[in-house]
Image (cartoon, rainbow, N blue to C red):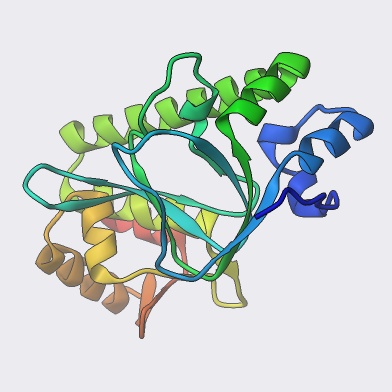
Length: 230
């Protein structure tokens, strides 16, 4: 697909990866990207494959996951418009993707190939600085997740996942924050069994902290949820 010249939309402008660029520099960076569309449930980047592209999500939703040697799929971080993935494409040495990334909804993305991306980063160092800040945030998320795994009980870990999803992908309603997630996805993210996740969600629904709907979770009160898991 030939390179297009995407206009600077609000989603692009609020992206941390493009933050701090002068308007004319932003225009050059966007013009160097290709626009791609992906259906829901498409694997866009595969763990272990060469990191030849960097992606910026402009519409839809995606998430990271990791496949273990035993074939278990470990759900990791959810991504919303403005976030990037495939940052290894910026490295001087050719590297593989550490994780896989899949779409959860029909999505649009801007895509830079590795050679173009590294050339842009050489001309606009702010891109590399922004990528380092994002990588630092991912490391902080991983550290918090690892500490939770070794120091928190299952209810605390699951509650943390619910609050995090409500803050990142939740839609604000009059009742609270609603988001798409199955019991299996929540269990994987919290490192608990699906049975444990189902049992805890049922308990919290009885306490009116959450409401379970078909394929959706409504978090009515983060404060009430955290009280029940203290």
